[in-house]
Length: 426
Image (tube, rainbow, N blue to C red):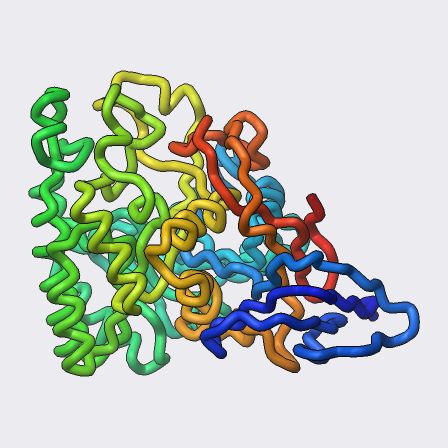
């Protein structure tokens, strides 16, 4: 049985209440009480938060883990360490492993192996939407949903065939399954390595136009409307895409959207100087795009903020820009990077936390993501004002390809609890 813990003198962030309250929280494996608590059970651990914030553990809906097949980049164990240090208590793992997670036995493998090796962090597998992620033959959505797949996605490989995506969205309605699709026209994006614009022209690098995303997103939203399927537009990067998303939501289409935290706090200028650690897919776009995405998070148009955690080895990043791999690690920096928007006054704290806790929990149909009696005791204690300079060599991931290297961030996780047990303490 988990020993009871009482955290006192805290600022409680419960996104469901849309406010921050002074109080205390008592929990064992589940939350027992929240608010004005005057006593604790015998033998309980008592922690004085010293006025720091308590929030639900973060739920990261887009994490790439190398196991199985690319354990040199990331394993369940290393990803679990990084997640716990970053306040992430649940992460959804992408299916682009070797072999691809396109069969119910592999979903079962991740659920069994992940929990044994992650140090307590919940790892939920996202299943491949098409066999081998080739965009042609739909996988057994029903069987993998029954096995425990969190949702279905083709990862970074867009499905070009509208017929295949229509069939998948339609079939998924039978299981109320969520389909995530990263909108990018592969023909417009082919050969591009950064945002198409003045900077790309000056650097002599081939660009990816924002229209590559907007065109594909329009198609995806129309297919969601046609089929009644639940669609998550995955990792939006462009202001051009937002009007179509807004129209779809206003029409009652079951459409949702996520954004990579890097696209909320960085822009194409972070690539200047051929900085390959800021080479992402989708690419960092203009400052106007960044501001539009921040506004969409603030007003709830974009539902979820993700880390887009994509570990790459140094030898794959320290190459000429066109040859370097796409991707950045983000599990440990998700919260601190997102808090930049709170410190700047761009997004309210509750709204920010909701996009990393309550909203992903609702989309994934998880009981977590809130500070309420009976909810799982997946809880983080945060000093949101603590500044630190990121040293990527000290990251707990097996890879250290962070665009925030040597940048100053503000907001540190002091302690992470999962099921009421401490899995990280600063």
